[in-house]
Image (cartoon, rainbow, N blue to C red; front, top):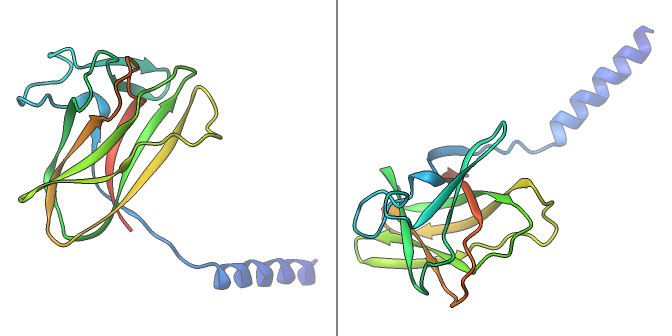
Length: 168
């Protein structure tokens, strides 16, 4: 028995020794329902988004299908995001509804930068959450994100649980 236990411990230590340590830090996070309208008001009050509750997971929000092409909402972070590499992480709830195409733009002192399309993986299970990561590398700090509709459909955005800034 002692030999078997010693072998198990040795194997566990060996696996731990060869497995690289990877750590991420959530720098800040904003719930989807906290989206802000272009004029600075609450997007929900301006009827730009709708919110629904997912049992045991809180609320999710999506931009309405009536949003025009290039229409947008903002997500403001309390702290400026430092220059360098970060990941914008969308926690998205996938249902069986079709969605419009949306891109994320970060707000810098010089304007806006498109950082990528919000794409739901084709393998995403219905009625579950998925994570959509958009890597960003900026030379200067930034502090806000816009989610813009890039097509002319009458479809809504995906359901967004949260938008987080991850420092790898």
